Length: 399
Image (cartoon, rainbow, N blue to C red; front, side, top):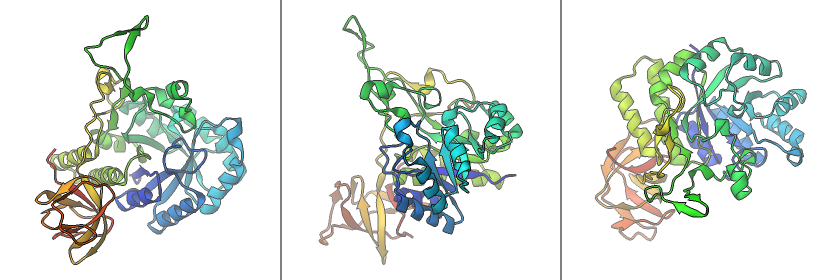
C-alpha cells in the first residue's frame, strides 16, 4: 500500500506550523502573488523559506499554489517567482495553467508540478495528456463519485489527490463569476466574495416575492468524508486534501488531527465504530457550517445545498492558545468567553485530550478574574493536567 498523504491548508506561517505538528504530511500555502486566496495572509519569500525548512526538518513537504487564472498583466515576474520557489526548495507547485506547468519544466525547476482541481480532470486519458506535458500529480475534479475515482486512480499514469474536507463551490470546479459581476472581485484571480452565500430576495417587476418570509441563498454545504476515507484508500488515492486556507489555527489543528487519527487507524486495521464516532464528534467541534458527502455517493440533491437559511452554528468552544507554562500555570491568549467553574480540556498534537475544572484565572496584573471575554487578552490559568506551549484550550462540550 502506498503511503497516504494528508495535505493541509495554511494561510500564514503560524498555521502552517500547527498543521505539521498536528499531523499533516504536507501543507499547501499561497504566496503574495499568483494565488487564489488573495484575502489569506499569505507568505512572502522569507516565510516560504522558513516554512520549507520547518517542513523538511520534520521530514514533511511544502506545496505552493500558483493557481490563479492569470491575465496578461499577471504574468510579470512569473519566471523569477518560479525560480525563487526552486531556490527555496519547495516540494511542489499547484497550477491551473498548462503554460505555467511547462514553464516550470523549461526553467528546470526541481519541484513537482501538481495540476489543480480547477482543471476539472475527470478521466485517465486527460491525465496521460497532462503527464506528457510535465505534470507530476493530478488533483481530481470534486464532482467525481467513488467508482470514478477508483477507476481513474487504478489506471492513471500519475498519482491522484482528492479533497476530503472543507468548503465547496456551488459551481463546477470553482468556475463562478458571481463575485466578478457583483463586487468586481475576480473569483479566479484570488478575490472571491462568496456571493453564493449571501442572502437574496426573489423579485418580479421590482416587487419582492416572499419565500415564507425568508431570504434564500444558493451556497453549498461543506464537504465531510470521514465515512468514505477507507474506500478512497482502497481506490488508490495517495493524497487527501483539506480545504481552508482562510481557517483558524484551531480549526486546522482539529481537522488535521482527526483525519490523521482515522487514517492511521484504517491503515493499521485498528479502526472501530467507537473511534469513528469520536472522530465525528471532533469534526463537529471545529465546524460552523452544515456538512455533506459531496459527489462521492451520488449527485447532490437539495440536501447538499443551503437554500433557505445559512443555518450556520458558530462553535465557540475554543478558549485560547497556550503560550507558555510554568508549574501548572499557563499563559493563555483568549479567543472566547470563559468563566471559573467551567470544565475545559487541553487539545494537543500527540496526546489524548484531558479535562479539568477551571479554578484559578488571573489577569496580567495578577488580579483574580471570575470571567473574561476580551479576545487576544492574556491571562494566567491553573491547569492541573499535562499542558505545553502550542496546545489549545477549549470548553468541554458534548456534541
